[in-house]
Image 1 (cartoon, rainbow, N blue to C red):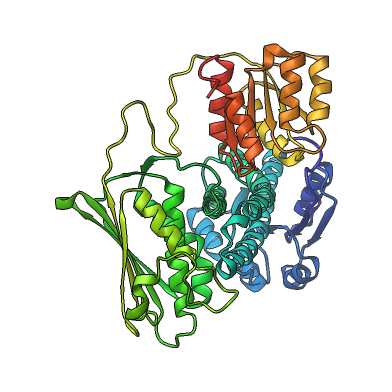
Image 2: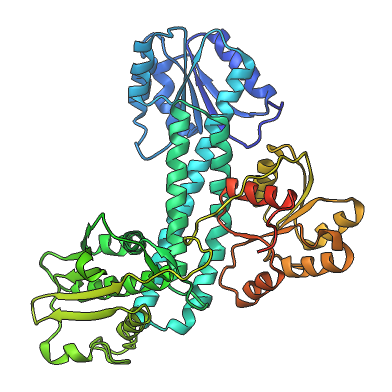
Length: 528
């Protein structure tokens, strides 16, 4: 570990042995931690905790007046706040550790201390706290952004504007999510077991949920021709409900999923099916908003084996649709909503998507009886030729390669840092350029085996960088890999398709980045 702390942190030391306190203070000072407070009287700990607001507590377990467990209990740290407590103890028995864990401790250090171990434990706990706080901030931002955009979509249904709206959401959130997911992955490689590993897994799972919400939201504004893949309908349903979960929860609407386990896969466009489910659930939600009684949306999937059909039903407990207008609900521009709250295109769009997939959609309802939409999809035969499921990656066995020189190009220093560390751990030599202009300078100074570049950057963007590489460094033109968070930009998409180069979307999976980079460096399958 280096001699300087990587990030500022407030550390509180509580130990009745003044010699231990001085030793820990010297360790921390030498490592660059400047904001440190301490006490040898455990009775002063609660007041000091309130005024100092530490990021980490080093706490002796055996002390007079109040022992370590009693101190943790008096601090009353909320369960949803990750404040790491590192217990210092000469009692290494299982019973002592269990007592401290039950009270809220996050890790242990046995006396006498080893300097390297002390600083490593402190760094790991502080890194986890930083990731946790960053995740909380991004979650709040994501929930607020999704709420605002969803409300806007439900009010206007102006589908033509959704592309630019959602592209903005994606770019705002995909970069910080890429940092969060990448750092969590790298941390999992270092922390193999114990409480810290469990906390890292929780952060990883929450970050991936945020990424799924962003992907689901983007699916509603897909701006390209239908792409048929093998699709699991139950997964589409779960992701659509997850997208609207916050809205449903705040309006006290229960979502009940009754999904069959024996559904065959559909040969379909998952994003279009996602749009159908979101639209029908959103309509049911809006219909029940003013009801004082129980509000419930039930989504059912079944496999009608004798007819080779997959069935999807979405039913609500709302006011229902009067019999005299049931036949009109799928007509374009027909709506019963007040002016300004809808264009009447939603159900027409759903019908078009379902029929394009060879299916049927119908509604059964009545005034005061709720509405139930029934959709049937045929089990279509997959076209001949090599295909793979959406999102699946087919990886050949790759030959070993030695250390290579890689240039990482991204105007976001945090993302560039994550990518550089991930590739350096593979043994490669990595340099970072914070933008396309700086990348071109470095390319004139030395030779690289591969360039990993963002597409959207100020000044020289990814497209401009690649064109210069084609012109000035042609040996590299097939050794460029792109990262993009701007997935809905039609010009960027067309450029990537024309270039035939591999690309990954943000937030990325670190292992997928490594696999793609390895494949390109090994000289196999680099062009798509």
